[in-house]
View 1: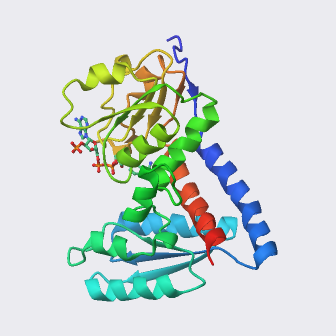
View 2: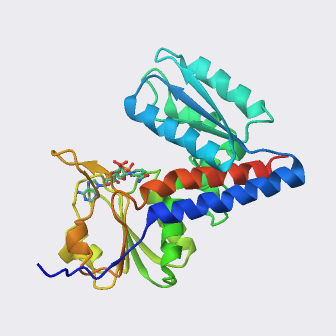
Length: 287
Ligand code: NDP
């Protein structure tokens, strides 16, 4: 069959490697100038197998760029007060520039309260209401890693976002909402869609920039994609056959889009790269 694919692939693996290389030299420079080595502490409560893998990957990435990483592995039975105590201790430590509490947390722990306890200046996930507020007023400091990574991917295309119609499908606090704020800051006209949106297909069809963060395998069909659109697929879904696919029908969409991210190898690798970036930002700002 003739290959009808016209879209250029946005190579997240390659761009994440570029980000890490930039960070490596920034870290070196920071060390030489100030004697400070950025430090990230990852807190893991319980034995969630996916969380164990994520944490391992984060620690490995830290080592690669020269960030000191420390892991606190707490038992599943950890109480809310015990975890609060650890966070307060980490907030006070001069060696710790970034604190990441791996989610989800066990039921006895109030996730929201824990995230709010993390010092905003060490909140490398960008989930603290202070950092969310900074993003909202257009003056961000530490930004949520996944949408931050998407912005870097968009930048790599050279497409000017100003005045473009951007449609974000999904409104979670970790992806959809911060994504919308970041696109707005770059002067896109942003529409946020969700499960109650009435005319989703019509809205998607108008998108010059389409970001899918839904969590449903190949939900966005190729024919919904506007000719020449830039398509960013945040979704990570396992099919019945165990294949990893995004929220967009990649094959169909790539016949119409100008640029598209693959799954895997698109947004995924960027998330950890931006976590490292946030840690370096936090360390450079530390007093
Ligand atoms: P959530 O489940 O928190 O949010 C999903 C959003 O999609 C919700 O806002 C929901 O709407 C909306 N939605 C669900 N069904 C529909 C529908 N039929 N039509 C329109 N909108 C719909 O997911 P996350 O934001 O955490 O993650 C989204 C996806 O991105 C997942 O596949 C996740 O695995 C992936 N992900 C990937 C990351 C990476 O590093 N690559 C990082 C984070 C997430 P409503 O609010 O109305 O319920």
